Image (cartoon, one colour):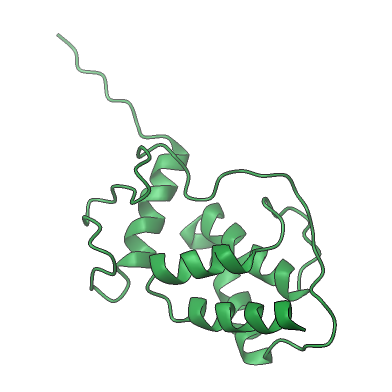
Length: 141
């Protein structure tokens, strides 16, 4: 009898990598998620973390200038292509919300404040807290 091995889908591999990399970057569990990469949202290992949506570029409100240091850090994170397209798209969506990206090739349009708040709870990166603060100021402007 011959065993057949089926490789995981690209989406599943990316979702698992994102879960392991972002949540466990400092080696400390942030929300009690098992280290095996099981999705926290109750989905399957094949479900992507960011559901595909239509491209909808959005310009930020005027009257507030986003902190250049936060923009620089988000651009650095968006350039980390080794973490996969889900990671890159997520940070590019933040740049669209900040008015630093025209939205070309970005799935899901601009990152909303609610989504950023969810990501701040979900991922260990302190940059998410900066993003939430900046989006809060943008929305208030």
